[in-house]
Image 1: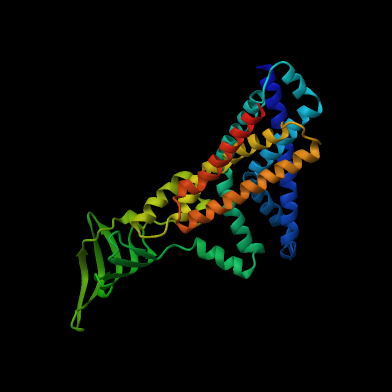
Image 2: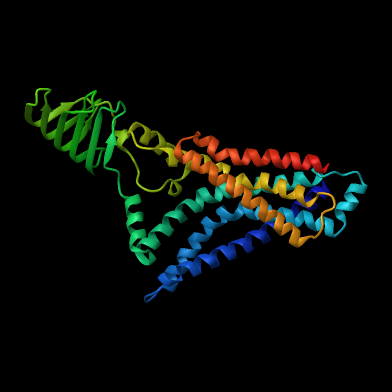
Length: 360
C-alpha cells in the first residue's frame, strides 16, 4: 500500500505539472491567434473573463493528453532513479505501476466529468457570449446567433405534418402558426394558418384559422374559423426544443433534448455524440497512459525525459487521430453514436493492456 501511495502521488504530480504546461501553451497560442480582435477601450477585463472561462474548457480538452505525458514522465523517472530496477529485483512487475496509473487516470476522469458539468458547460456558453458581443468576427457572430436562435420548423412524428411556429406563448402555445399536411406522394394536401395555437387537453385550439385544402383535381377549398379545435399527434412538449449547442447543456437537459428533437423530427446526431463524449472523453487518458507507461518500461530503452516526451506525444497523436476518424464516422451516421465515442477508448485500452502484459 505504501508503494501504491508513493507511485500514485508521483504520477499525480507529474500529471498536474504536464496539465499546467499544456494549458499555458494552448492558451498562449490561442491568445496570439485572436490578438488582433482585442482592441477598443476597456478590452482587458473582457479578455480576462474570456480566458478565465476558456480555461475551464481547455482543461477538459487537454487533460487526457496531459495524463499521457505525466504518466510517461513519472514512469521514466522510476527508471532514471533506479527504482524500477529495485522493484524488478524484488519480483514486482509492471502491474504494480499500472495500478497507480489507472487509479490516477480514473479519479482525474471523474473529476473532469463533475467539473465540466458544474462549470465547463456554463463557461462554454459564456465564451460564446463574450465573443459575440465583444470580440467576435462578423461571421462568427452570425454563427453564434444562429445557434442560439429558437427553432421554428418541426416535422411531425409520422412525417406527414410540418410545423412552422414563429413565436412562443406562455403556457406552451405559439403564435403565427402554419401547419402543412403532405400526402403519400409528398404533395401538399392541406395548409392551416392561425394567429395562435394553444394546447387544450389532448388537442389544440386554433385562433383565427384559415384552412386551405388542395384537392387532386387542382381545385382549392377554403375555410375560415375564429376558434377551432384540432387533434394533432404532437403534444406540447414535442415543440420544447431549447436553442444552443449540445456542449452548452448539462447532462439532464441534453438527454431530454434528444427525446424532444426525435419527436419533433429534428436531427439528434450531434446531441447523441455529446452525450456519450461526456463520459468517454474524460477517461481517454486511461488507455493512453497505460500504453505510454508500457513504452517507458520496455527493455533496452534509452533516454528519459526526451524519450518520454516523444513517446507520449506519439501516443497522443495516434489517439487524437483515432478519435477524429471515429467522430467523423459518427457524424456521418456510419456507426452508432456510442460506438463513435467509446471505440477509441476501448481500442487503446486493449493495446495498453497488451503492452503492459508484454513488459511483464
